[in-house]
Structure formats: structure tokens, C-alpha cells
Length: 217
Image (cartoon, rainbow, N blue to C red; front, side):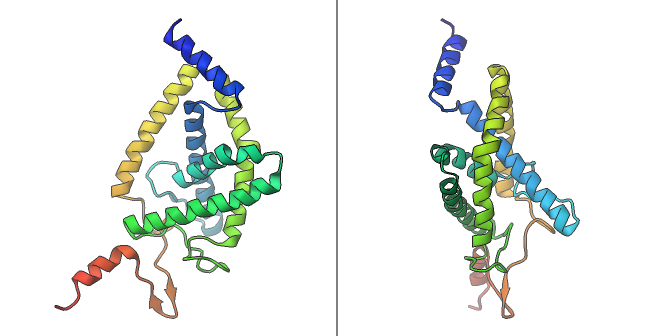
């Protein structure tokens, strides 16, 4: 039995158990990342009339959407028979991912790519009940519509072709992630100005060290 035959049998066993192969999970992550980028770009065009790259990276993907969508499929699919539970858990899941990502980006780059400080009951301008509800509904869309459609598409493709596409796209993604960590995508329409409250500027974490260095001796 050849290695390709053994791989095909193992893949069929995974699918029969209701799971996905590594390539399928990779494809879902990349597809959700690209869909999130398209959503953010289209929303900005609609609200502000500007066509800009709304992602933290250079390419057409937003990994926070990829992580959120893939996590919803992997963790919430078992509750698919109860949509309200999927939505509620999706809200909790996406809120945690968004808050952790926002804190990470602030710590690494001192930049904000979103600001909910004007929304009621927000926390640090990074999460809010309204946006959590929207992302909870997005998790439902991922579980009930997007993932089944994408998996049907993937499973109609020859596995060798799917694997090659995943390897090439992930290589580009990893390269982009490395470059963007050092030189993130920032600027007008992409990152937001530091939050101001009562005329006082809120200092971002990355600026604290610089201020301490410039204090009078």
C-alpha cells in the first residue's frame, strides 16, 4: 500500500468520524481570515468612503477572524442542535479572542486597529456588548453556513491539489505575519488615534518606556 493510499484511508476515517483533516482546518482558517478582511474593507468603504487595507498585515487576511471562525467550528459544532447556545458561547469566545488580540497589538505595536470607547459598557475600548453580539451571530454563520459550504468545496477538490494550495497559502501567510510583526500595516483609515477623555490623552503601553527615558534627570 502506497503512502498516498494510506493517507487517503486515514483522511476518510477522520471524515467518517465527523472531523476535518489538517488541510481542511487550514483552508477554513484562511477562508475566514480572507472573509474578515473583505468585511472590514467593505464596511469601511460603506461608512467612510475609503478603500484601504484594514488588516494588521499586508495581505488580504485578518487572522483574528480566522482564529475566531475556526475556533467556533471546532468548539461550538457540538452544540449545533441548540442555536441560542451556539450564539451565546460564540459571544463569549469572540469577546475573549478580540480582547486578547487587542491587548497583544497594543503591547507589541502600541497601535489600535479598532476603538469601541464610544459604545456603551465597553472595556478598554477593545470589546463591547454590541460588537460581541454581532460576532456571536458571526459564529453562528460560520457553524451553520460558511463551514459546511467550504468543506463541501474542499472535499470536491483532489486532495493533492488542496494540500498544495494550503501549503503555498500558509507559507505566504507566515511570511506576511513575520514581516507585519516588525512593520505592521498602519495609517489613515487603518489604525485609530489614541483615545482621549476629558481632554487628557491616554498613553499607550508602548510609549511609557520612551516617556520614562525622556524624564529630567
